[in-house]
Amino acid sequence: MKEHKLQVRRAFLVYQKEIANVFQVDSYNLNRIGLKHLTKRLYQGSFDGAVIFAEGLAAAGTGVKTAACGMIGDISGAHWTDDLKNQPFFDDFVILDRNNTGFTD
Picture 1: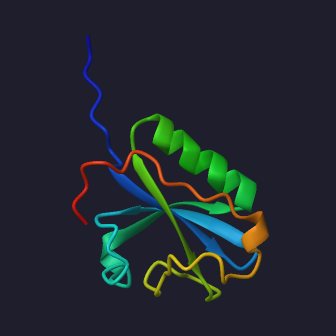
Picture 2: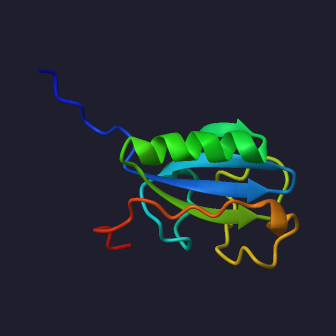
Picture 3: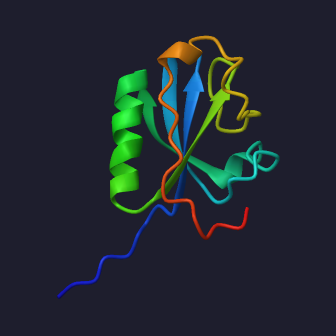
C-alpha cells in the first residue's frame, strides 16, 4: 500500500477585509509571519470558501489556526494578528484551531 506523507503540516486561515486566505506556514509564531518566505498562499476567496478549504486541510491532518490582517492587497508578508474580536466582520468569522497538539511554536 502506498504511504501518504502530509505535505502541509501547518496552515493559517487569515481573514482580510471582505475576503479570506489560507496560507501554509512554517511556524505559528505571528512575530515571524511577516517574513514572506515563510508563507505560501493556498487559497484566496470568500469567507465560506476559505473555511471549507481550511477544514479540508484539517480533515487531512494539517494543523490549522485563525488570524486576521487589516491590510488590503498581498498580505503574505504583512503583520497578522490573533486579536480576532476587534476585527471588522468578526461576526462572520469561523474560528478554527484544529490538530495543533504537539507543535511547540
